[in-house]
Length: 117
Image (cartoon, rainbow, N blue to C red; front, side, top):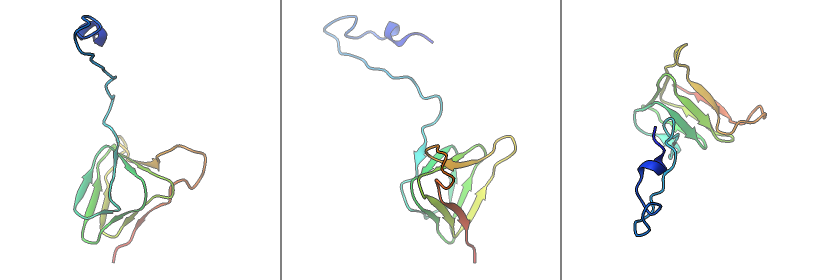
């Protein structure tokens, strides 16, 4: 709760010292951008995930999304589940699926599809 400038002793206090830079702390976890076009192993997500393009859950693999998570899609991005897909939201901790950028366009992100044999 202290002002960082008051508690950090640096060049502002003595010219021969180095400068300490500080930034505000994040109020929550940083969103994770999924780096691959597939999920090739059993995976559990919790938190905020950005899906920039098409993402496939491979046959025989699973994606489980835990309550309270937020899955945000890029333009025309999609999630295709050829394996197992579980979104485990609750009324108290819903899972949100939305676009990364908020817009008035109706079809900003593409789809969430399950295909099981």
